[in-house]
Image (tube, rainbow, N blue to C red; front, side, top):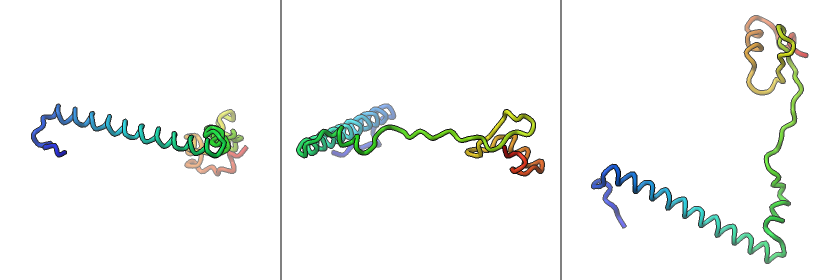
Length: 107
């Protein structure tokens, strides 16, 4: 099936694009469902449920990071701290530019 795109109007092209997008999405959904059903059947043949096997993988959700203790304090406001992770706070950058060493701001 070949479509001559040169003769279609902009509206027809956009409609075709939307229909193709829906068809792709539908195809992907069908394939995922087929794969899932196949995996469930294989697990059942081995005497397990797929959920039981997946729980062994440690699929417990996103890992939570432990809070880090602050390493540096703002010399002008000691309650303003930074752990040394991530983006440097403006006060830290300004202090470095003013000639202070990181050790001077260490807690």
